[in-house]
Every structure is written in structure tokens, then in C-alpha cells.
Length: 317
Image 1 (tube, helix red, strand yellow):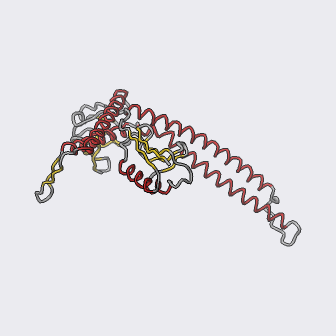
Image 2 (image 1 turned 45 degrees about the vertical axis):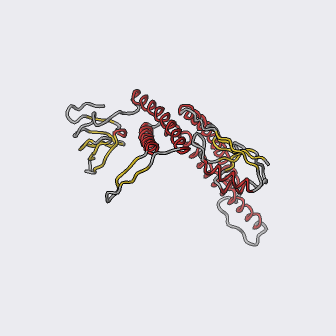
Image 3 (image 1 turned 90 degrees about the vertical axis):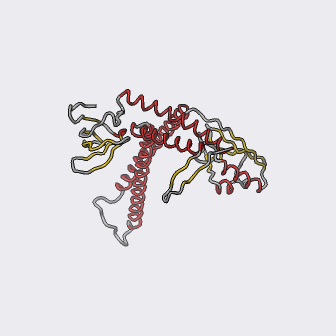
């Protein structure tokens, strides 16, 4: 039986040729693969628009081959542009949000119907909370009515809880894109990408560091396939960094984000940080040391500053 493991940026890592009951499921599960009903295929999680997980791919292929399957591997290392990746992600998140909103509406409708059924079941009980007449011919019917009312109320409660959970998921999905593009989140992502880029560069070029006791640890420059992988990661990181820097520049231009630094903040200035005004006591390369109205001290990254009042002139920025 022929199986093909395929990796491409847009689709991630998939395996073609499997079928229910063919004996591949246990091997795939053991190696971290998951089944997707939407794709109709097994896939490696978090493999879309990333470097292929060669170790998992090779290990899976070896185990499937040992089990009697013929396995081919096809890997496309080309990465999509960051702008294309983000546009695709926004589309998929919008589709997910729309689907969850529809599901939440259905759950709310179900909850309403169950509540109406529960109300009807309660109305069938004797008026005024009449107790069960033990031994009377009405006892059996009365007990059945109470049981049905109890079950209906329980279904109504469960349906309402399901509707609330569905609404929370829909609300979270609807806000996902806004959260991803929040000014502070964008600024933090840029800092992380810069750190990632520096780390990749160190591994490519080699590095050294002095450990406690004076011992110097030297890391040789990457070579061969590892160096090729790092070069691809570096190119992808540079592309992402450029994209998010453009996003932040637009946010600053439109006033959605501030653009403060050590050059614009001085000791004695007032800055607004998550709703509270604080006084700057020191300026650092990437943050300001502050004290709030209660005497609490801390540091605030310049990218987290919401508003600024100069200490002397009272100018606002």
C-alpha cells in the first residue's frame, strides 16, 4: 500500500493514502499525528507555514515501512510571504468565528425550547404544590409528572450551560484577530522576532560566552543541512519582522499606538500605563522605571505607554 507524506507551507504536513482500519492509525498517533475531519487526512499539528518537522516525518516513515507500507516523502521548503500567511489566517479565523456564531445561535434556540418544555412540564403538576397522595389512584401519575418535570428542568439547565459555553467560544473567536493586532501585542511580537533573529544569527555564525569561573563556551558555526535550515528560518523571520514593523508603523501613524523611547521620556514625566498615571523615576534603553500613586515601583516598556505628560511643560503625547 502506497502512502505519501507531503509537506507544503499552505497545507502543513499531511499523509495521503491512508484509510480507516488500514493499520496506520496507531503509528501515526504514537508520532503525534492527528486526524482532521475538515481535511479528511492525518496531519502534524502546528506544521502549516513552518519548517517541516523532519524528525517526526522520518520516524513515521520508518515505522510505517517496517509495518509493510511503501512510504514516499515529498517536502517543499518554500515559505509563503508573511502578508499572505496573515491574510489566510484572518480568513480562517473569520470563517471559524462565523461558524461558532451560528452554533451559538443554535444552542441559544435549543435552550429556549428546553426552557419552554420545562415550563410546560411544571404547569402539568397539580397547582399549588399539592403533595403526592400515597395510595391514591393519582399517585403513579403524579410521580411520573414530577419525574418528567425534573428531567425537563435538568435538560433546560444543561442546554442553557451549553449555550453559554458556545457563546463564549464565539465571542473569543470573534475577538481573535483584534487581539492579535492589538498595539501592545504587535510591539511584543516585534521584540520577540528580533530576539529570534539574533539567536538564529548566532547559531549560523557561531558564538562564544563566558560562564561563571571564567570558562569560555564556544559554539561552532552551523554547517550542512542545519545551516540551510537556519538560513530558511532567518529569511522567514526577516519577512515576518518586516511585516509586523509595517503594521506597527501604520498603528503609530493612525494614533492607535504610541512611539516612545528614551528620547521622548524623561525623569519626572507622567505616563499612563493600563489606566493608571505613574511618575517616571528613571529611563532605561527599553523601559521606564516608574512609581505609582501608592508608592509601588516597577518598569514599563516604552511600547506599553498609553499616554504621556511631560513633567515640566505639561505637554501631552
